[in-house]
Image (cartoon, rainbow over the protein chains, first blue to last red):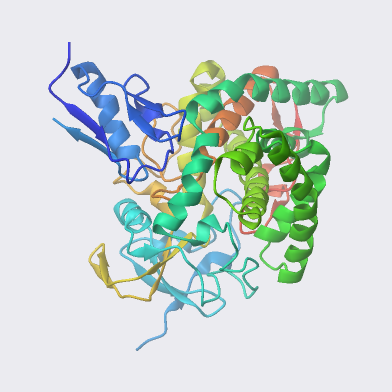
Length: 68
Length: 397
């Protein structure tokens, strides 16, 4: 069941560091084409939200956005 | 106006694993203006929030052009600021143009695919170490060859040139090396790399980093060669030093080593804590930036044109985690700055993590009774480099 939070990655900022994938592997991936971050679950269930918050915090390019 | 105090970055260390004497006291608090021994003045920023701000705000440039690079000595900057492919000396879109294609080569899933190979290299080196018997030097047995072999494979360069990679790295990161010495090594390495690049171009392959850069980017030959040199050098120096320093910190803290030995499967999380703590304890010149506009950092106005040095001592700021000054391997991973922050964050961070996790876990699984053959304080440390580490780590088991 989708949650109430929405996750986005600002592709103009993303540097492809993969920190979001480490923080929340269920929610994020990296594109095989360009290595940039991909949101796999745009509206993650509540139990995955803490990992997304961690991704927001860890992203060196501050490209991950979470609206709760 | 009073003259800024000289940063005690060159002072002796009371203990080889702790910052130089007076360093922590000198840099703690708001941004402090300090003078490097080469006469350049910079604002030292060491708070966690301030460090993140400076490293991620585009108004702080990483370009060192027109000014000697901030150094802790009087040596000259060995890399020409206009060097094509100088990824750590450019900002904004020009930086992203180089960084993004390279990131593809270090993707988390690509690094995970590499793990069995890293494990194999680690196991082979531990086999040799075990067969030769104690005492052994951990640096030459594992710490140095591991990252060196892995980065060469990742790039697609034959490992037989290892000594040249190492000599170039030493010249690039040496504190007192001359520009001529660096250019001589880099030129030689460039001559080794050029035919490899040409061959991959002809073959059209993209299965290693050189192939990827040669056949799937718009990089010029000069950019490509310099990026390769940078990756080979960085791949050698940093991970090698940290694998050694992590082990030494654990030797000095038997209570923490016991935590790793109790549950080596948590080595992944423990590496994050070791990285946070070890980098925080290094002291050193930090990451240099230059303000391109007036910016307030931690309540201090930094003016356009002024230099800023971000000290990763910020990893020990209580704003990051409670008891930040202590090593605690039971801690969950926190957002430390061990790999830097912002668009220039360590490109090889995910590779380094894989090497450090596998290396550390395997080392103590293979030799549960591993211990230093001489006191940690009495080992020899390399103080002639921008990077810091033990020259030799004699161990028994």
